Length: 97
Image (cartoon, rainbow, N blue to C red; front, side, top):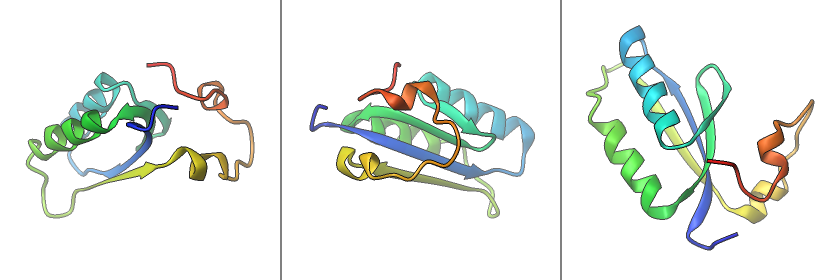
């Protein structure tokens, strides 16, 4: 795995349906995959993580809205505990973007 690439986990709680859809579309545009309704994960370059954060800030979140972005190093990702069937894209060293 490239040292400049990292796994990225994004979880959000957005009240407005339209804004939530636009944020979901933006996460998909960056190649992240939905793992739960409001949780996405992907494998991005460090610069892409910064670009995504900048892009998400432009959505003018309301006071009750929240977006969490967690970068996960490959060593930590390999130590994850998965209960149930793991999505096929996570079985590989990198996600297909």
